[in-house]
Length: 372
Image (tube, rainbow, N blue to C red; front, side, top):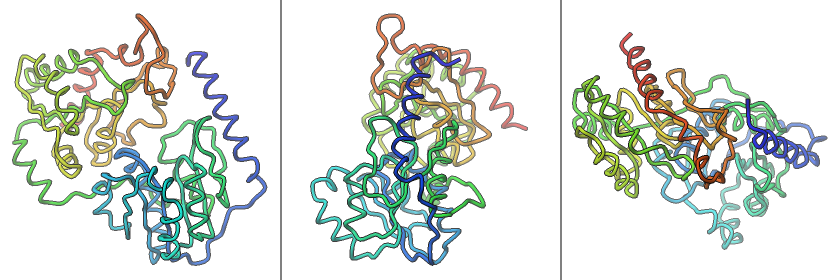
């Protein structure tokens, strides 16, 4: 049963969604007339962009002759650069758009887009960018919080769906606004064969376990000692090779965990996004906190154990039938906060309630199934 705080927060969120949608509730969905160019705005990180790929594919499947361009944050290009459904990628940070709205809108105006789509956080500045770029059909946005932007300049908004479901389905709901419906739902990551082969050699022929211990948000952190104990178990009992992944900034924390281990493990943090994909694609099992690694593993159909706390786990759990999500609803309010509001013994109790034995049992289960 969810704690009272969680119930109240969810109720406020859902009421806000309905109020936000009210001015659009009497407008019908839009039938597109042979659109030639789509523009998607998605200022997201790796995992969020992966969850968006089914929607990109659905647009291309329904309008194969149309071109799909996308605006993403700087540094994220390699997540989508090999995706054949995407025509052009603009790397522009949200703040740059806010500071140079007129310049960017004039640049986009020259592209003559038929449809602009904001899948998340349809804030005033982003929706205004689409309007000033003379994009006639502007739609958005998916499930948002009470304090999120509202997308004042959209021509249609997505009807709220109050069911709890994986976030990729909320993205697909946005497309219903323009009568685009999926025939197939598939997350996609494309990896260069050279990157794949590179890490096949580095990681060797043993059972290969990837551990992603460092999240983007503090409320998603698990216990270093428990990570070390799980890694030791896998090396000693399963004869596995263990690899820790992450960005360059994550390397010190990985080293901390490795220093607590009795056995050796490799710290592969610090490579490119392409390297990150190559490592996970060559693994046999991934153990990850709530961050991009669990979505990458799910997309490659690699067995994955996701350790989840502050996020709403039904929204962000890996989209895979080879995933185990460890989450304790009796301890967690699904607060969606990036700093724990608990004090004393209850500080970070959502993640602290995940035990070493739970993770080990999940490893045993998935590795056993993998042998079948």
